[in-house]
Image (cartoon, rainbow, N blue to C red; front, top):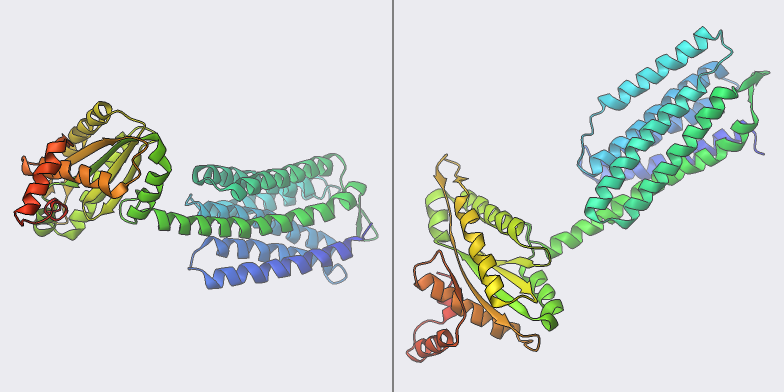
Length: 403
């Protein structure tokens, strides 16, 4: 079994390495990021380890007091980093308040017991509570974002919290004895090194979770439209290719008179209109439907394995909630929007996206030429009419429909 000075030196060496890594992550990242909190947490643990390792120069009573407060504060800041990572409330005053209460509790325990109690159980209990709060934040955030390693980190923090809780129980019922200025306790000798390694594992998982979340964010940016948050054109095509064999209905939607919205109310109001439109449509669509922005004010919906009549009814049901939205411009003027849509049913054997999309686009053009603010199903005569228009030398439907 390693003696305590050796364990504290080993712990200090590990925490120095963690400080360097988290410090570099903070320096390379944006100001106020979660890495700052993790750096602060590791620095506090490093200070505690150094104070305990310097037993010949710092009285044990003072060293354990400083190290205990540092441990409680470090777990609080570790939790703050996780909450910052997932966009939760991460105000510094809460861990500082917990640390102050812990320090006061240790002082009272030592004073009221005449020095026979060291208050170590208070330190471990505070650390356990902080880590439990951090585990809950990581679990909720990782589940909502589908992060696998984040969920592993949550369970690891739960184990870390449980270890501190068990240690607090032992510290309460089996206080550490001080003999010749050194602590003596079988359970403390057994638990100290595993707790040090659990601390190291907790910081290691923070970096893994941060990396996984950054990678997932890049994937999201590659697949989703930045403004509206729905699938972009490429991702919509990929989703389409996966649903080809099921057949279904493809619909193309276009916001009516969108150019006049930009001209009258400004591009910022136009962006708000696009986001409002996309959010309204996405909230009303059934699960399994694929929704994406093709570009500009044009969107597409794929209803896999759906009959044309059912899809038509669902599209009609989208018109009232879209028109009911009241959008505010920067000048405070209110306006609303409507949309036109065209749709076509296709069989699973149809693998030509361009041909199917052209049919839906023909129906969209028919809706726009009929007065807009309506849904039109594709019919063969629409395509024949389009071909006749091309023979007369007029503009292609794809160009006119965007007007």
